[in-house]
Length: 61
Image 1 (cartoon, helix red, strand yellow):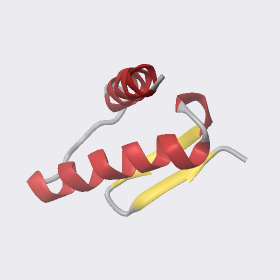
Image 2: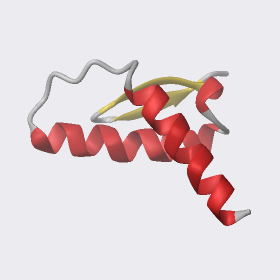
Image 3: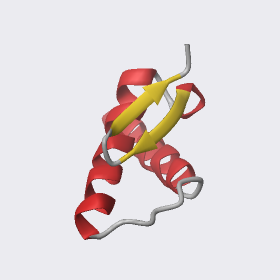
C-alpha cells in the first residue's frame, strides 16, 4: 500500500510539475518542488491544487 501511494504521488507530482512554468533560480525550483509535494498532500490530490509557486500554494475551494 505504501509503495502504491508513493508511486501515485510521484506520478501526480510529475503531471502537475509539467503544468508549472518555472522561471526561477535553483532555490526557486527547489521551493516549487517542495510546495508541489506539500500541496498534493494538503489539498487532497492533483485535481484539488489551484496554484503552486515558490512562496506557497493554493487549493481549490
